Amino acid sequence: MSEDLTGRVTVTLDLDGVTDKAGLMDRTATALALPDWFGRNWDALVDSLSDHTLWPEGAVERGLLIVVRDWRPFAESDPDQWRTAQDVFAEAVDRTPALAVVLALGGSSQPRSGHAGRSVGA
Image (cartoon, rainbow, N blue to C red; front, side, top):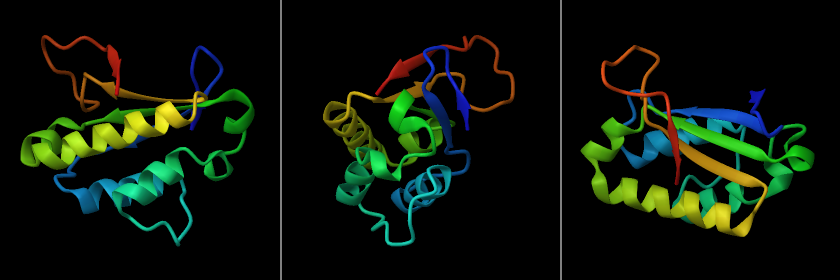
């Protein structure tokens, strides 16, 4: 966990090796330290992302930025579930203005030629 330039608490959601919904749910639960009762379904995910009482320490006051990395293999292996994930991220952001979710275009920590280190919103 770190802080971005706007002062938000930043959490990286690394999807390296994730190719399905179950993997996304597990990684999200781990990255955000969600409680054991997290339901690992789309409704539970949007509710958890937009529930500031589940956010990391300091995020309620400063806001939360979730950076999703290495998402492309999941998007390619299951495009329908990936679209749903993006819709869930967007709904959570719409519900909670202090939340931002961005997709890292660079992918992994390994250098890739032709890719800039930019991010886009979900």
